[in-house]
Amino acid sequence: MSDVLKQLEAVLEERKNADPDSSYVASLHSKGLETILKKVGEEATETVIAAVGGDDGQIVYETADLWFHTMVMLSHKGISHEAVLSELERRFGLSGIEEKASRKG
Image 1 (spheres, rainbow, N blue to C red):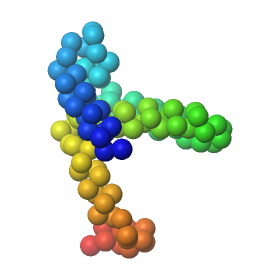
Image 2: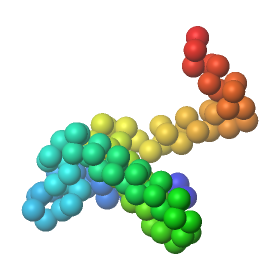
Image 3: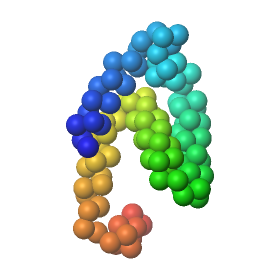
Image 4: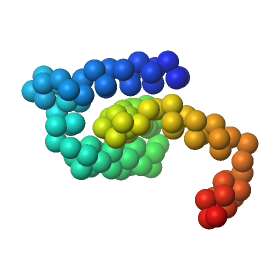
């Protein structure tokens, strides 16, 4: 999975400064963080609706859209997908209760 994320991250970085008229990713970046966040929210909502509907194919499709737009957000903020994977790795083996308690300190 990480190879796909690396490839996607490279493409997103490449298109970040492309012509907004020729690249969807560049158009999102040119409109700014607020527009990107609206897309993330929209895709999250569509993912939830798909899950409620129960069609596995639609759930996968909408989740891919959500992940894609989240990667655009990370790119816009200059955050690598590796930072997210590292955080997930840090949490691995912790119970959800322990992880939540560690944030209260």
